[in-house]
Length: 186
Image 1: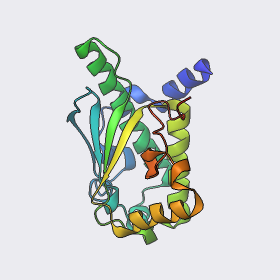
Image 2: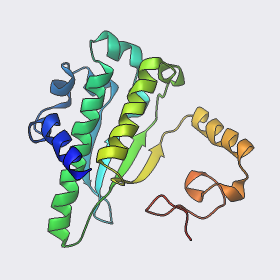
Image 3: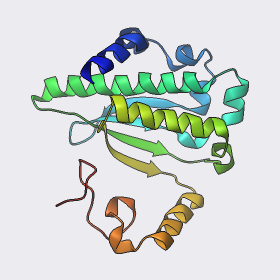
């Protein structure tokens, strides 16, 4: 498993990838408008803070600009690798392990219709695979700001399927928080 991961890192060219802009990764600067992502300081726990404005993402104009799902995945790898490196720098600076980040998602302007496309699903599936295989547990906490009512409707629908006591508080329920490992407490 470790050898496969090392081979993937070498094949992905991560040393060079983290040095280029988001626009260079996907071949056009239009991505800065539709998927702005930036790293800004650290939270009170010392974790790097990442801001992503997913509310601006629109699949059709991104694809029409010539950006492929594979390029979006490569951009995600670049951003994840930057976070991993910032965790390493913070660990050295603070003298303790910093292994995760705080992701702040700005959902202002979210157009759920843009997300109901095959390309969007493929992109999200690719991002989940990358996170699970190469950056597990790197995302320590996610905060969604400026969420439209549709996000609230999703959580209300979830509570129709699962009793609030069975749903972790991380997901709007009354159950115990999952904690850092993503597993329920014993």
